[in-house]
Image (tube, rainbow, N blue to C red; front, side):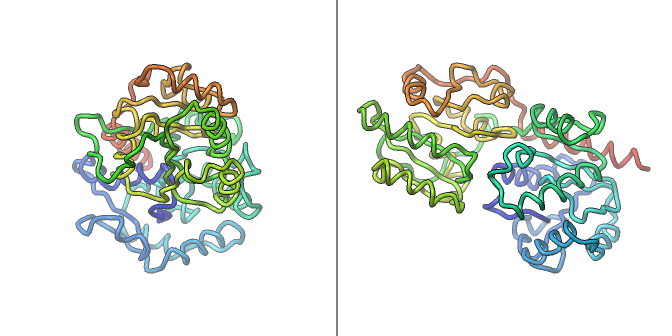
Length: 357
């Protein structure tokens, strides 16, 4: 119900995998997708759906009212009851309605708003604290996408460890994964796919990249993709101040298949993020057997990124040294497949439904 295609970052891949795989893997169980008029087309016409007769803006308003007033969305509650479902899966860290009439499983990517409040507006921060924290304590079970996030839930949010089942995001094995489709640049390039949020580390990357370019240490240009947030104006000023307008190229939001094509054509794939709840693009990039250079974060250790491929992006010498290493980057830990990730999610949903019979 909260799904906004093209605007929800890495979790969009997970949601699309739920839509694709859950009806297949559920076996004898029925899967019902709750949608509204604005995102109805995200689900195939052949799928079982329960449609809320309202727009995205109305859903947003209802969620705000639930966060800041005693008002509750009784019409959605009634729709859930009438559908006959035994358990609900909430894929984006929060429940709507907050008073869910059946058991519920909550997917949690991160709790960054508690650790980096400077990256959020006052309103957004207050909304997250009210809705996200109430969802954590109101749901039946929580499925964080990493052990890193699970620790934060226990230590910072007061969530019981018994309520948590870590289910990491998956990847498509190279023998059955997505086929790259789309044009790629006809010049050597480094690639970073990420929305331009402040914590994604674009600023540090731009400055280190510019220093190496001026020193003649790089032949590649830098290609970016992802939605351009309000922070992009700040980043554009950095690009101009570094005189890198011809060397740093932003393609905007591109399709999943186009991202795969850009992975396939890149000399190296960069992830300078300051904070990640998981780091799904790393798994997406691995099958293309490229150099994958990440910032130094605990979650990248959890994914199995070797330390020699983790750097401080504020230091251009570390970026240069990493680019000079022989590749590809190979993970020290094998990730699970998307089929296994969705299968584990369905198992948890069944357990929660049966526990309340």
